[in-house]
Amino acid sequence: MGRRIRVPEVRVIGADGAQIGVIPTHEALKLAEEAGFELVEVNPRAAPPVCKIMDFGKFKYETSKKEKASRKHQTTVVLKEIKLRPKTDEHDFDFKVKHIRRFLGEGNKCKLVIVFRGREIVHPETGQAMLDSVVKAVGDIAMVEQRPMMEGRRMVMIIGPRGGVIRPASPVTGSGPGPGPSRPPTAPSAPPSSAQTSAATATSGAPAPAAAAASGAPAPAKPAAPAPAAAPAQAAGSKA
Image (cartoon, rainbow, N blue to C red; front, side, top):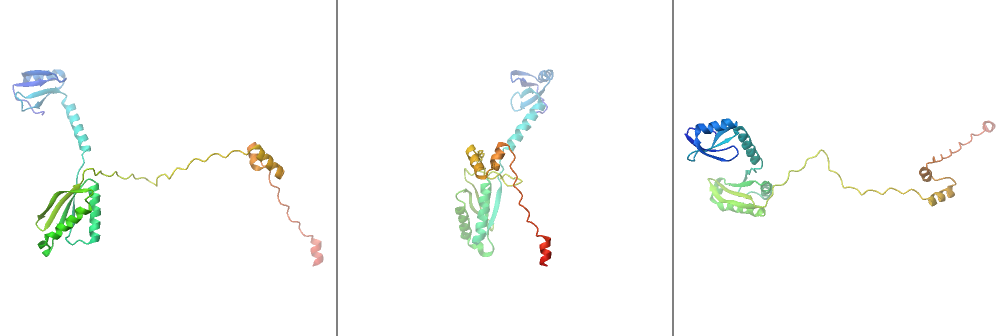
């Protein structure tokens, strides 16, 4: 598309999509120039070739936009390789199974590799048993995509996530802890009734501080305690 046209006649499609028909190439170029567009070859294998009158710059821009959008929604599947031994101990086995489950949960595939050393290659059934144990441990989320096969001194098997395994959402990062549980709003305290104010006045002989605050009057200040009287100097002197 977009190459120089070297044929005497072409089938032309107008800028509005209407069929113009088979016309000489120079006339098609003249029509495109008069419309202010370019003559673009869209199907060179047809006889005669099919050309369209269009804005080629706008066409390239829209095409690149669509390609970027399609690449944005593509999911890349990674093949993770996990190496084991025919006699991997239980702790190591649990650790590797944990990683395999995480890889599968992210939508990736796992390549399980059993590495044989020395005379271990004489007993490949030990490697097969180890692979069976792994498949059994992750059987709820994994399926075998490639059966075990020997590659030199290695036994290889590929497993992938089962249908329905969803990629987990990325955790939301924040600068601090999230908001705590909301507390129910407390009801505003009701002002004291006139009966309560009267009872407080009758008991103390003075309006209660709460009642005074409610009525707008200033609360009475508490009387200061009297200072202890000083002992007479003469008595102290006579005693001396």
